[in-house]
Image (tube, rainbow, N blue to C red; front, side, top):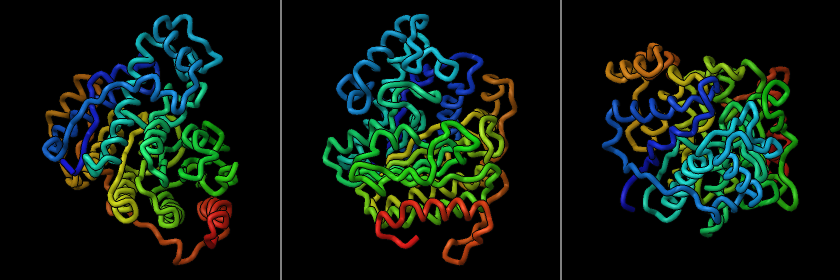
Length: 390
């Protein structure tokens, strides 16, 4: 193995830009990359720019007619076909859309290849995690589903057991759909309840089909869930499923939109809890997958205050150089934030809630508590299908 961790990065990924009024502002990617450098994390990383995903790779998940539609919209945005989810309010067409979407997908696929082939132990693509794209359509700000493509490539390379953990505030619907009938992939999504948030999927009863029953787990959390409940729910479901599945590689999606400052959702999670779950995913990779870990970004629309700090923590954990929560953010980075956005950047790498306190599920639960009801629903739906006690 040539190194511990690899950061997939090509400045051109910031061209994934739906326009000035769209919440997915690519400045979040640029500011994250600059913060990684400002905190000195580059020294612990291999930084690699991979090639865009080619046609044969994209077709591991996406239909040929959809790829053709993306290419056409990329060449002529005014001619985008909304029947493919293109040219919509969520996914406006823009020139070069196919090229930059394929580039982001290429980073995630290359990350998976590097981890599987033993070139590195961990690989991060925080520009990735575009988990809503479906085989035949764009959705939820996502054109190509790089997470699903990375998993599909791992299967192509011979992986037989892959766990995908998605802690974005939105359900990881596109990845679940891609492997709905594939028992080799266990998808676990921890998200805000579909009653109150897009994409209105991710109910506990969604557990897989076609010989893959029990290969999808959904923990649908009530709006307003904060740090203690979020971390409790994660630990009440995820580690037991991972231990049972015994994955050869772990793929995780770390959307930062669970944060209490995110404008598009209704959870109340802090940066410190996000960091705690990132650490937990890292530990699960080492405990059950010989350290093989592909970590992706995802949603996150507090593009100055939250996203760069959250994903810089993720990079630091993967690099073996975790950033202490109390770390003061360099003034040079804050000046760049102001120059780019006219906003004041955060002062420290914490929301002041570290360490995060939470109670273990085994210590007891309250069946009248809405958070515990959500956990119970997930466990009762999927655990018996895997021969586990709910």
